[in-house]
Image 1 (tube, rainbow, N blue to C red):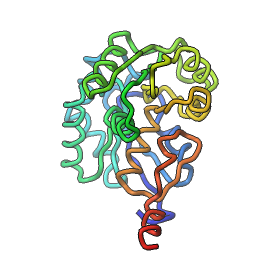
Image 2: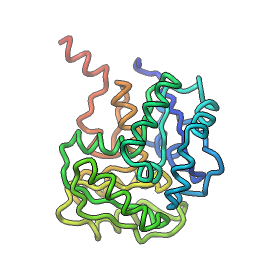
Image 3: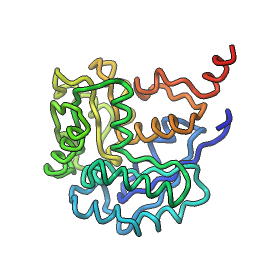
Image 4: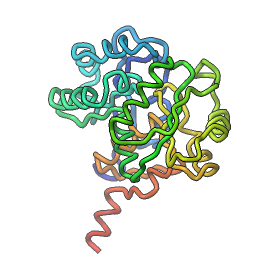
Amino acid sequence: MDSGEMLTLGVLTPHAAPGPEVEIPDMAPGRVRVQVARIGNAPSRDSGNSGALRTQAGTRALDEAAAALMPAVDALAFASTGSGYALGHRQELALVERLHERWDVPVYATCLAAVSALRSRHVERISLVHPPWFEPSLNELGAEYFRGQGFEVVDARLADLPDDPGRIEPGMVVEWVTRHLCHRAEAVFIGGNGFRAARAIHDLERRTGRLVLEANQVLLWSALETAGAPIAVRGFGMVFDDRQPAGTRQRRDRA
């Protein structure tokens, strides 16, 4: 990807609540464009019904959504934290691999991206924060997902915040997470692609001294890492801080 090029990310999601299409362009203004295809009868937000989430991540539904975006996108992102939890790591990875083989573009998924970002920072102990509209069973599935990938989940909570994505302000997220963060956690993952918490990341990291990851943030991080895109992201987390845009790396290699 050359300097100045626009990266177009196609988002597949079973949720109607705006999330990636709001936060990803906000993190990389003028450099990343998001096009969304919603899968089937999308619920208004990240539903806690794991059975419904697995159904909406089915082959036919995903292919129909992807077909609506191709060939106008450079990559695909499956944006559903809850679906990743409901499927489990192995099935989520299989979903990504199948979409890649079918459409011949890079493919990302929220929970896989979160695992990669945590491993890139050598994190072992994590806290999970989920939106209030997740069911308790989905909260526990999230803990099981990360434990299955070798992380110690020291805490997994549903945030006591308004039960409406549009009413949640970044400052609310900062205050709630700061008050409830387990002292043993090395990092926090804020799950839920409709839980728009990206603008809370900078203040949370400053106040807690922990790495903070968020569902849409890790999708962008994963896409930029894979694409080698010369796009710098500032103010949305330490995970971007030691990431050198591809053009910078090439210039240094030649020096």
